[in-house]
Length: 253
Image (cartoon, rainbow, N blue to C red; front, side, top):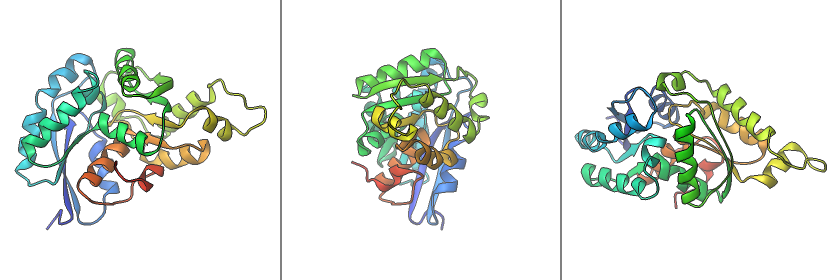
Protein backbone atom coordinates (compact mmCIF):
# COMPACT_ATOMS: atom_id res chain seq x y z
CA UNK A 1 0.00 0.00 0.00
CA UNK A 2 1.35 3.41 -0.95
CA UNK A 3 1.51 5.98 1.81
CA UNK A 4 1.62 3.59 4.72
CA UNK A 5 3.70 6.11 6.67
CA UNK A 6 1.88 9.22 5.45
CA UNK A 7 -0.15 10.45 2.52
CA UNK A 8 0.71 14.04 1.66
CA UNK A 9 -2.00 16.02 -0.09
CA UNK A 10 -0.74 19.02 -2.04
CA UNK A 11 -2.71 21.79 -3.74
CA UNK A 12 -0.82 23.42 -6.61
CA UNK A 13 -1.49 25.92 -9.39
CA UNK A 14 -2.38 24.09 -12.62
CA UNK A 15 0.71 25.44 -14.40
CA UNK A 16 3.13 24.43 -11.63
CA UNK A 17 5.63 21.87 -12.90
CA UNK A 18 8.03 21.85 -9.95
CA UNK A 19 6.29 20.96 -6.67
CA UNK A 20 5.52 17.32 -7.35
CA UNK A 21 8.97 16.61 -8.75
CA UNK A 22 10.90 18.18 -5.87
CA UNK A 23 8.62 16.63 -3.25
CA UNK A 24 8.69 13.13 -4.76
CA UNK A 25 12.48 13.19 -5.08
CA UNK A 26 12.77 14.02 -1.37
CA UNK A 27 10.18 11.98 0.51
CA UNK A 28 11.28 8.48 1.50
CA UNK A 29 9.68 5.06 1.23
CA UNK A 30 6.27 4.81 2.84
CA UNK A 31 5.25 8.40 2.16
CA UNK A 32 3.18 9.20 -0.92
CA UNK A 33 2.17 12.39 -2.68
CA UNK A 34 -1.33 13.19 -3.98
CA UNK A 35 -2.00 16.43 -5.87
CA UNK A 36 -5.00 18.58 -6.71
CA UNK A 37 -4.69 21.51 -9.11
CA UNK A 38 -6.17 25.03 -9.19
CA UNK A 39 -6.40 26.94 -12.48
CA UNK A 40 -3.59 29.47 -12.98
CA UNK A 41 -1.44 30.37 -15.99
CA UNK A 42 0.01 33.80 -15.17
CA UNK A 43 1.34 34.85 -11.76
CA UNK A 44 -0.70 38.03 -11.38
CA UNK A 45 -2.80 39.41 -8.56
CA UNK A 46 -5.99 38.82 -10.55
CA UNK A 47 -5.27 35.18 -11.41
CA UNK A 48 -4.00 34.38 -7.92
CA UNK A 49 -7.18 35.84 -6.44
CA UNK A 50 -9.35 33.78 -8.77
CA UNK A 51 -7.30 30.64 -8.15
CA UNK A 52 -7.84 30.81 -4.39
CA UNK A 53 -11.56 30.29 -4.87
CA UNK A 54 -10.86 26.65 -5.81
CA UNK A 55 -8.64 25.82 -2.84
CA UNK A 56 -11.37 24.48 -0.54
CA UNK A 57 -12.76 22.27 -3.32
CA UNK A 58 -9.26 20.85 -3.85
CA UNK A 59 -8.94 20.09 -0.13
CA UNK A 60 -12.30 18.33 -0.22
CA UNK A 61 -11.20 16.16 -3.16
CA UNK A 62 -7.91 15.32 -1.44
CA UNK A 63 -9.84 14.17 1.62
CA UNK A 64 -11.31 11.40 -0.56
CA UNK A 65 -7.81 9.90 -0.66
CA UNK A 66 -7.56 9.90 3.15
CA UNK A 67 -4.51 12.15 3.15
CA UNK A 68 -2.80 12.89 6.46
CA UNK A 69 -1.99 16.53 5.73
CA UNK A 70 -2.88 19.13 3.09
CA UNK A 71 -0.27 21.60 1.81
CA UNK A 72 -1.31 24.69 -0.14
CA UNK A 73 1.83 25.01 -2.25
CA UNK A 74 1.74 28.55 -3.59
CA UNK A 75 3.72 31.36 -2.00
CA UNK A 76 2.08 34.53 -3.30
CA UNK A 77 -1.31 32.80 -3.36
CA UNK A 78 -1.09 32.32 0.40
CA UNK A 79 0.15 35.84 1.26
CA UNK A 80 -1.82 37.81 -1.32
CA UNK A 81 -4.00 39.62 1.21
CA UNK A 82 -1.49 39.99 3.99
CA UNK A 83 -1.19 38.67 7.51
CA UNK A 84 -4.27 36.78 8.66
CA UNK A 85 -5.22 35.58 5.18
CA UNK A 86 -2.57 32.86 5.53
CA UNK A 87 -3.91 31.47 8.81
CA UNK A 88 -7.53 31.71 7.65
CA UNK A 89 -6.56 29.71 4.55
CA UNK A 90 -4.92 26.99 6.63
CA UNK A 91 -7.93 26.82 8.92
CA UNK A 92 -10.38 26.50 6.01
CA UNK A 93 -8.37 23.77 4.33
CA UNK A 94 -7.92 21.87 7.59
CA UNK A 95 -11.62 22.03 8.42
CA UNK A 96 -12.57 20.83 4.93
CA UNK A 97 -10.08 17.98 4.73
CA UNK A 98 -10.31 17.00 8.41
CA UNK A 99 -6.51 16.91 8.77
CA UNK A 100 -3.74 19.44 9.50
CA UNK A 101 -3.11 21.96 6.72
CA UNK A 102 -0.15 24.18 5.91
CA UNK A 103 0.16 27.09 3.48
CA UNK A 104 3.49 28.10 1.97
CA UNK A 105 3.59 31.64 3.35
CA UNK A 106 3.18 30.39 6.92
CA UNK A 107 5.52 27.46 6.27
CA UNK A 108 8.22 29.93 5.27
CA UNK A 109 7.55 32.00 8.38
CA UNK A 110 7.83 28.89 10.58
CA UNK A 111 11.02 27.83 8.83
CA UNK A 112 12.71 31.21 9.25
CA UNK A 113 11.63 31.33 12.91
CA UNK A 114 12.99 27.80 13.48
CA UNK A 115 16.33 29.00 12.10
CA UNK A 116 16.29 32.13 14.25
CA UNK A 117 16.36 34.37 11.18
CA UNK A 118 15.21 37.99 11.32
CA UNK A 119 17.26 39.87 8.70
CA UNK A 120 16.77 38.22 5.33
CA UNK A 121 17.61 38.54 1.65
CA UNK A 122 14.73 37.57 -0.65
CA UNK A 123 14.96 36.51 -4.29
CA UNK A 124 11.93 35.77 -6.46
CA UNK A 125 10.98 35.23 -10.09
CA UNK A 126 8.04 37.67 -9.71
CA UNK A 127 6.98 41.02 -11.10
CA UNK A 128 7.32 44.21 -9.05
CA UNK A 129 3.66 44.20 -7.98
CA UNK A 130 3.93 40.77 -6.37
CA UNK A 131 7.36 41.57 -4.94
CA UNK A 132 5.85 44.59 -3.20
CA UNK A 133 3.11 42.43 -1.69
CA UNK A 134 5.60 39.82 -0.57
CA UNK A 135 7.89 42.38 1.04
CA UNK A 136 4.93 43.96 2.85
CA UNK A 137 3.84 40.55 4.12
CA UNK A 138 7.31 39.68 5.40
CA UNK A 139 7.65 43.09 7.06
CA UNK A 140 4.23 42.67 8.65
CA UNK A 141 5.15 39.26 10.02
CA UNK A 142 8.29 40.60 11.68
CA UNK A 143 11.16 40.09 9.23
CA UNK A 144 13.64 42.74 8.13
CA UNK A 145 14.00 42.41 4.35
CA UNK A 146 17.51 43.68 3.70
CA UNK A 147 17.27 43.21 -0.07
CA UNK A 148 14.65 41.82 -2.47
CA UNK A 149 15.31 40.94 -6.10
CA UNK A 150 12.80 39.70 -8.69
CA UNK A 151 13.12 38.44 -12.25
CA UNK A 152 9.91 40.06 -13.54
CA UNK A 153 8.42 36.84 -14.95
CA UNK A 154 4.63 36.65 -15.22
CA UNK A 155 4.01 33.39 -17.13
CA UNK A 156 4.17 30.50 -14.66
CA UNK A 157 5.54 28.16 -17.31
CA UNK A 158 8.40 30.64 -17.68
CA UNK A 159 9.11 30.38 -13.97
CA UNK A 160 8.95 26.59 -14.19
CA UNK A 161 11.60 26.59 -16.92
CA UNK A 162 14.17 28.18 -14.59
CA UNK A 163 16.90 25.84 -13.39
CA UNK A 164 18.47 25.39 -9.95
CA UNK A 165 21.60 27.12 -11.27
CA UNK A 166 19.44 30.15 -12.07
CA UNK A 167 18.40 30.30 -8.43
CA UNK A 168 22.01 29.85 -7.34
CA UNK A 169 23.27 32.66 -9.58
CA UNK A 170 20.44 35.01 -8.65
CA UNK A 171 21.16 34.59 -4.96
CA UNK A 172 24.90 35.02 -5.40
CA UNK A 173 24.43 38.16 -7.49
CA UNK A 174 22.15 39.78 -4.92
CA UNK A 175 24.34 38.85 -1.97
CA UNK A 176 27.48 40.05 -3.76
CA UNK A 177 25.86 43.44 -4.27
CA UNK A 178 25.15 43.94 -0.59
CA UNK A 179 26.98 46.89 0.90
CA UNK A 180 29.10 45.03 3.45
CA UNK A 181 32.52 45.77 4.90
CA UNK A 182 34.69 42.90 3.73
CA UNK A 183 38.07 44.49 4.60
CA UNK A 184 38.75 42.15 7.49
CA UNK A 185 36.52 39.19 6.73
CA UNK A 186 35.86 36.59 4.09
CA UNK A 187 32.81 37.02 1.87
CA UNK A 188 30.87 34.37 3.79
CA UNK A 189 31.77 35.96 7.14
CA UNK A 190 30.60 39.36 5.90
CA UNK A 191 27.29 37.95 4.64
CA UNK A 192 26.73 36.13 7.92
CA UNK A 193 27.20 39.39 9.79
CA UNK A 194 24.75 41.26 7.54
CA UNK A 195 21.85 38.81 7.14
CA UNK A 196 20.55 35.75 8.94
CA UNK A 197 19.16 33.81 5.97
CA UNK A 198 18.25 33.87 2.30
CA UNK A 199 14.70 33.13 1.18
CA UNK A 200 14.12 31.95 -2.41
CA UNK A 201 10.42 32.46 -3.10
CA UNK A 202 8.03 30.59 -5.41
CA UNK A 203 6.98 26.94 -5.43
CA UNK A 204 7.53 26.76 -9.20
CA UNK A 205 11.19 27.85 -8.88
CA UNK A 206 13.43 24.76 -8.85
CA UNK A 207 15.86 25.12 -5.96
CA UNK A 208 16.58 21.87 -4.12
CA UNK A 209 19.98 21.10 -5.73
CA UNK A 210 21.11 24.69 -5.09
CA UNK A 211 20.29 24.91 -1.37
CA UNK A 212 23.30 23.18 0.16
CA UNK A 213 25.87 24.69 -2.23
CA UNK A 214 24.52 28.14 -1.42
CA UNK A 215 24.65 27.47 2.31
CA UNK A 216 28.21 26.23 1.97
CA UNK A 217 29.31 29.23 -0.06
CA UNK A 218 27.46 31.91 1.90
CA UNK A 219 27.72 30.52 5.43
CA UNK A 220 24.04 31.18 6.24
CA UNK A 221 20.82 29.13 5.99
CA UNK A 222 18.83 29.14 2.76
CA UNK A 223 15.06 28.67 2.85
CA UNK A 224 13.02 28.04 -0.29
CA UNK A 225 9.27 27.87 -0.77
CA UNK A 226 9.14 24.15 -1.61
CA UNK A 227 11.68 23.22 1.04
CA UNK A 228 9.75 25.03 3.77
CA UNK A 229 6.37 23.71 2.61
CA UNK A 230 7.53 20.09 2.49
CA UNK A 231 9.32 20.40 5.84
CA UNK A 232 6.19 21.88 7.43
CA UNK A 233 3.82 19.32 5.90
CA UNK A 234 5.95 16.33 6.88
CA UNK A 235 6.35 17.57 10.44
CA UNK A 236 2.60 18.21 10.68
CA UNK A 237 2.09 14.60 9.58
CA UNK A 238 4.69 13.47 12.16
CA UNK A 239 7.13 12.21 9.52
CA UNK A 240 10.79 13.13 10.04
CA UNK A 241 12.14 12.71 6.50
CA UNK A 242 15.34 14.58 5.66
CA UNK A 243 14.97 17.98 4.01
CA UNK A 244 17.73 19.73 2.01
CA UNK A 245 19.74 22.31 3.91
CA UNK A 246 20.06 23.41 7.51
CA UNK A 247 16.28 23.54 7.91
CA UNK A 248 16.20 19.75 7.92
CA UNK A 249 17.92 19.76 11.34
CA UNK A 250 15.09 21.71 12.96
CA UNK A 251 11.69 20.70 14.28
CA UNK A 252 8.46 22.53 13.55
CA UNK A 253 7.58 24.97 16.34
